[in-house]
Image 1 (cartoon, rainbow, N blue to C red):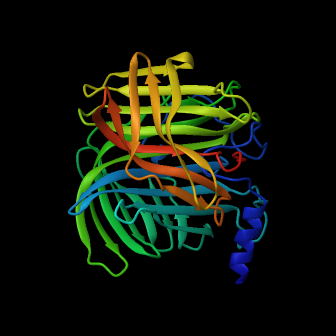
Image 2 (tube, rainbow, N blue to C red):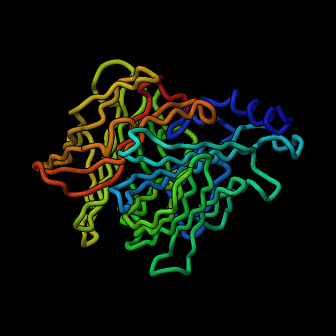
Length: 365
């Protein structure tokens, strides 16, 4: 193993598992999340004073042989290593996950990478979104389109994905102007915004196959924090759904390690006209509809869920059951990240992604 790899793995061994949560008490060396106005384009960029951060982009592609799902996530993780250490020390890590959901294959194509930040090869820009891990890169082209366009290049192990995702709507600030509560204590929060209804144009080349051009719709979340999950939490169920009428639905519940009563719930529904309604407490509820057991981990996932938001009742339906992503080599976590349709009264009203964490083991970030 190369010295660089040993440094990275040593840093990872000191970290709890990712991807979306942290320990209940902020580590003193990391910044705390407190309510403040988000400022753009600066807040599109990285926030290295915080423990964890991610740029998470998921979507559906309408390919010639049927729909495909795709997920791209770049994580930035501050390790807490002394800033006075050697410039070779992994003070910041960049981790990246990529996956393609193809029902014809029946299981995910996926790849993952991790390296320490630095030397112009692994970077997360401060001024705007521009995250790179060697040849993997996600960046925002502010001059393309009305609101800007995200661009991504991902030469992965078994596929090569490149796409543009043009913003069709203004940013959606989650929670209170981008301050998103995740638990009963004030510090259990993140800064969080969403860019829904992205118009995607992609080129996908799978190993041994010709390149496929496809278009579709995507969703981007950018979130950063130093403390999110309560000690009693196991993980969460989360959806980000682009509705066919132009609306956007976000909902999540923080699941407990014991019992069934959620520790925290939240939902936002922005209609096609741009009006956002927030929900919480008993106005948001998740209920399993269909379960699937992983043949690899033995975990049982509620791959279809009934979700109540206010007076509206939705149901998710997976593009395929096996969308489990085992990222123990990079983040220590196993999670289900699934392209899913959104139904209301039995009729499809949207498409997006359902995410479930803390099923194999409680999240420890």
